[in-house]
Amino acid sequence: MAVYNTYVQQISFDGTTYTKGTVVDLLETFNIISQDFPFKKNPKPKDLPTRDWAGEDGLDVYVPEKIPMKNYDIDVTFLYVGDEQNIRTDVGNFLDYIYGRVGANGAFKSGRLAIYNEHVGIGRKDIVVSDVDNEIFYCSEYDPDAVAKFKVRFTVYDPTTDVTPTYGTYDGEQRCTELNFD
Image 1 (cartoon, rainbow, N blue to C red):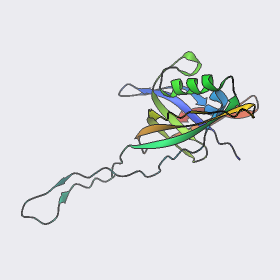
Image 2 (cartoon, rainbow, N blue to C red):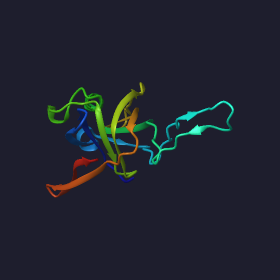
Image 3 (tube, rainbow, N blue to C red):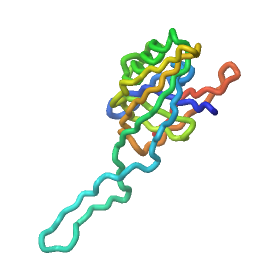
Image 4 (cartoon, one colour):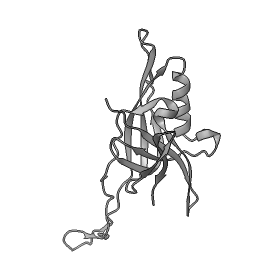
């Protein structure tokens, strides 16, 4: 099975500009991978404004040049494979990070996220956690590795801005150094 990395970056927006935290590779930082990341390339459009004039057929519809899209929710399944002694700590740190309770390297903190998944090749910004599944842990007594499977529901508030990674080489490895968006 090929492993595709998921990169997360805490971001904040002051009304005019974005401030970005450090890019976090979920596998490297928390021993977590995403089993799926169902970003939508084309989400549902927003309802168009209409007027229903009495005595006239049909509706008077305003159709803009570019039809705006609705925000949407996605359910993401995450897998943890690691040491049984660290499972609660790693998963807890991951959840604290995506909720914005802690930042990468103890610095910048924000619950607003930019996420890019290599498998689907799509990234989005202005994402927040809206729910975490209660059934988090599964550990096998016969395997030295602990396995956890859990779901997180995210709300994607900016459904159209593409987020793309910038890679750099560090210690001979390709790593994502920044998530880009306009």
